[in-house]
Amino acid sequence: MGSLLVSNAAVLARYPADRRTVSDHHRPEWGFLELSKNAMRQILLGLLMGMGTGPIVHADNGNFLARKSPQDVRVLTYNINWDSIFPANDPHNHRFREHDRSEAFVRILKAVNADVVCLQEIGERRPAGDVLRILEQAVPAPAGREWYIYKAADDVIASIYPLRMPAGDTAPPTNRGLAMALVDLPDQMHRRDLYVIDTHFKAAGGTKNIARRQQEADAIVHWIADARQTGGRIDLPHLTPIVILGDMNAYDTDPQHHVTTLVTGDIADERRYGPDIAPDWDSTAMTDALPHHNAGLPEVYTWRDDTGQYNPGPLDRVIYTDSVLRIANAFVLDTSKMAPEELQNAGLEAGDVALNAATGLFDHLPVVVDFIIPPPATGDADGDGRVGLTDFAVFEECAASASPKQGCDFLDPCVQTFDFDLDFDVDDGDFPYFQSRFQGE
Image (cartoon, rainbow, N blue to C red; front, side, top):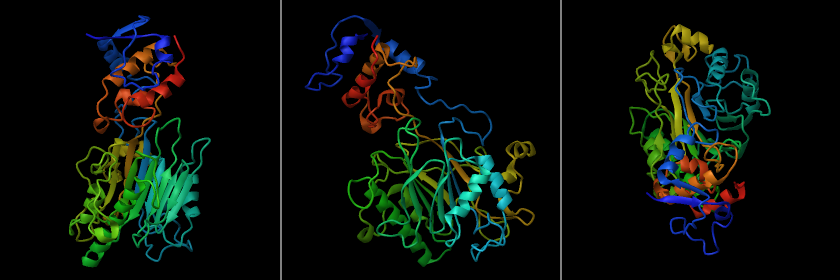
């Protein structure tokens, strides 16, 4: 069994100018602290677990509406049915507005309590401030924060964190518009921000509408390809989590290739939108969340209308870069299937997700996803509030046993604690950051 021998001097002079790799570095036998590799593993799997600076631990409290961890970023997407959340006499109401769910919408906002709210079918003429006022009254932002909002076409992104890099269409354009923004998450809580693409694809069947949905998907994938490369119209920081969500009108009566394009990067019109790409940062496909009703029921549909001829279906999707995001909790909110006690505890009513529960008239349902975006690396492996020799020993073990970047898991205890340069690995590039935090014996 090998051992690791460390001292203050070992840390302060850890790397000479030739930048030797960790695995090739000769560790001088100062003998101040000797820890076996088995002990290192115990620290990684024991001391790290549950520490404030260690791995994120999620507990199941039995309530599907509850977050598993306060660190999770909760995102809500909801096609609210044209301006139904505003009063009937509102002068900005869309010409298609028929229903009033303003009170139910407030109850849903309070029960879900999302950090990021993405809405569709907000009338094109309506100012974003109308939505902002509802949010500020229904779910006031926590102390020290405020609601930020961006609107384009009929799509709205609202967030209790600042919105950067807003854009109302891609280049080349979707010819329909959409809302996109970078959610600027607190640096002390999350090591990366979250890029959100809120979209409402063309509705209805037929060759022409299918082609328009495909055009929008092609345009979004091209935009993501641009964002991941330096230059062009948009540059995202490397490994920024990306979420594409909204009403994608993914009917069971058409090929749904536009959804396949968003997940796999298979562009149909390569002449206009460029070659296919693997859209995730690790050069793989993205993932379609497809959450279940109330987290535990078998249904996954997000749209239904019991008065019509069409089948319920998952028209609304949440597609994300799973190389840099994990889901802690996800559900389609269906108040019609909640027990009376659940409804009472949540402040909801059974008909809140219906347009007219008595007649079986529904539309889109709210979709909620809680994303895990880890906090910044601290170097404090043993959770004692300082970076010392024990932490250095763990750093050494993590670096020596690190797997190739392509296969690293960003929730791995080593990566969470020591990946300062955000490359999913613990290596030479992380040591200067660790050294700057080192506090000695």
